[in-house]
Amino acid sequence: MLTPLEIENKKFAKQMVNGYSVEEVDQFLDDLTEDYTKIYKENTEIKAKLEELEENVSRYKTIENTLQSTLVIAQKTAEDTKNVAREQADQIIKQAENEAKEAVEGLKTQIALKKQELEDTKKQFDVYKAKMEALLVSQVELLKGVNEEE
Image (cartoon, rainbow, N blue to C red; front, side, top):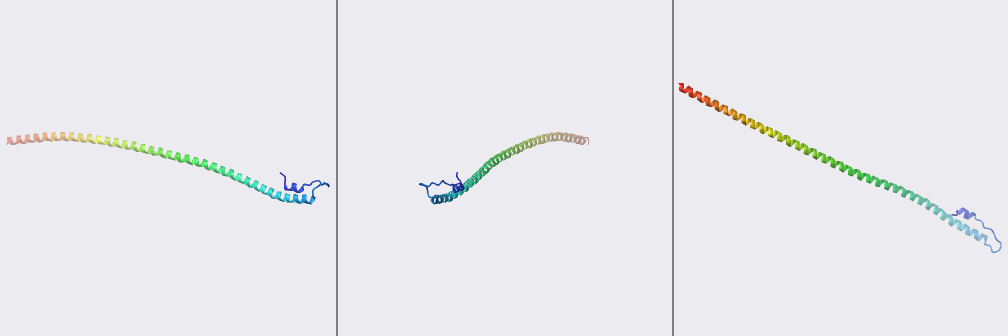
């Protein structure tokens, strides 16, 4: 692409016969240089702006990718946290169930021991009652024997 300076410095060979008017050619070149300079500057500014926008797009794409990665990580972390919480809850429930079973077994054992103690006490009472009855019978017999001697 020609630069405005190249257009401005362009010189044409002058011909005497059927040549162009030097003043008209110079004026045309001046006008052309002025318009071309404006367009050249605009083009340079547009290219700079385009480059800046492309950098921004690239930066935003990087940010978008980072955000997507962060979101994926956050979702995975949330899912992992839920799974860990679920596992802990299951463990707590199992532990509570085991403790409850152990408590029930302990209570059943205590009940069985208390029933055995009750049975033993009843047997001891029956034995004691039988001894007392025998003692009373012997005492009655003894009293009858004392009454008969008198």
